[in-house]
Length: 147
Image 1 (tube, rainbow, N blue to C red):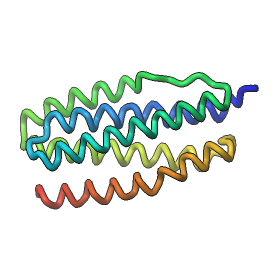
Image 2: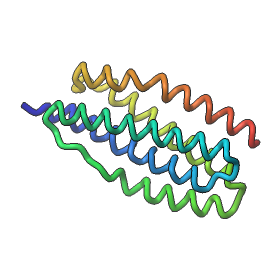
Image 3: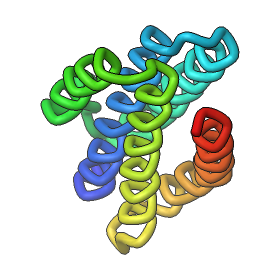
Image 4: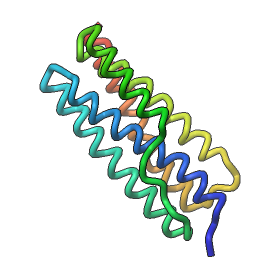
């Protein structure tokens, strides 16, 4: 039996997790400082793991998971490349991932507020919320350090 509503909600979150992964990978490419490159690479790996867990939950619900992210993310990555060309690469990378993280946190909040999401899916997303908040604080710290 498929829980289509929960699978759809999770696919919406999954798209943003995939976008976040790609954003962190691009940030790692354009960052200049090795510390930032490592931070962004670790965050990309974390987002890949989150995406895998969400895909698994979608499968458990009988759904099919999306795998490509969004077209908007492609445009965002192009913007990151242009932005990096016009300013310090570390600053451009931090600003871009900060915007992406805010979007991702909002997607999580929206999904968790949806009564159609199953209990197991809510538990999964709640388990990652603390990590998202911690990442946001770290990004703020990086932004302060480059400002």
